Amino acid sequence: MKPTLVILAAGMGSRYGGLKQIDPVDDDGNLLIDYSVHDARRAGFENVVCIIKHSMEDDFNAVFGSRIKKQLSLTTAYQELSSLPEGFSLPARREKPWGTAHALLCAKEQVNGPFAVINADDYYGPHAYQAIYGYLTGAHAPGEYVMVGFPVENTLSDYGTVTRGVCVQNNSGYLERIEEIASIRREGGGGAYEKDGRNVILPTGVTISMNFWGFDVGVFDYLAADFPRFLERSLKENPLKCEYLLPACVHDMLQAQKVSVKVLKSADAWFGVTYKEDRPIVRDSIRKLKAKGVYPLHLWR
Image (tube, rainbow, N blue to C red; front, side, top):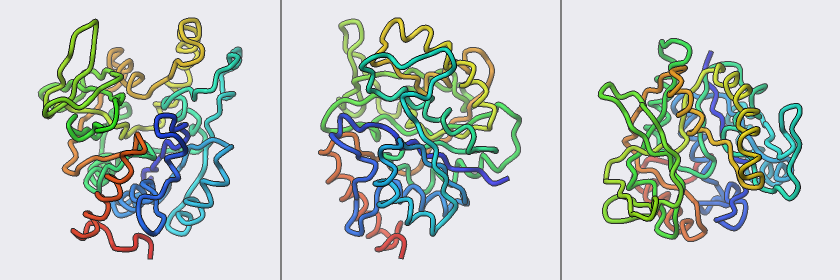
């Protein structure tokens, strides 16, 4: 069975100031997600599942879905605030989505084999898709997962802080642990953040998870069982802002020795849109890649 590409596209884009998932990055009106699908198709992917909110469905289909359906199989899943396990109700005034792990759980019925997961607003490059497709189509046991990592210096914004999954690997190239760290800023050749009143440096080359994962369907069983536990704990502490995040779930599975995660390194530069000020840089990066012949002048023509 060929792997599926699952795209997390339901985020609110609050720091960006709008629905950045449907903001064009080239003169033909293509989105970053178009380049992701283009790279994935070249690597061998034929099926895509996009996770969105019902409220953005018409806009999403108008600027992306109708076009991509001509290229490969596209299915939609929906992440809603009300998508909660039995026995839980939506807290009053809650507006923030439940996070990336919850988004993935919302696609459980649309995925029935090995799959890769990406963010809609990140550019990962052709090599990343080739690497993860090769891994997912190779021989490995259930519970052997994979992640494409990027050096920290390639994952930061010049216009504000970001949240990143900082990774520690063993000598065999497998993930030992991952820590979700907020408010990372660019400093020197790498990054830095504040912790307990001190400045913590992330040196050049530290591996960062940009939510490019490869899983089998067993991960859905774990998420379905773990999400209620997360809600029991987190709704008491932070009912309006708590998030069920995929890197944190992977970390917990690793610590419980339920899975192993092979770390693949991308040879391509990462870039993404976190703030509106990032958009001109992304557009310029796309133009340069076209000039180098990485992409055709008109992506889908």
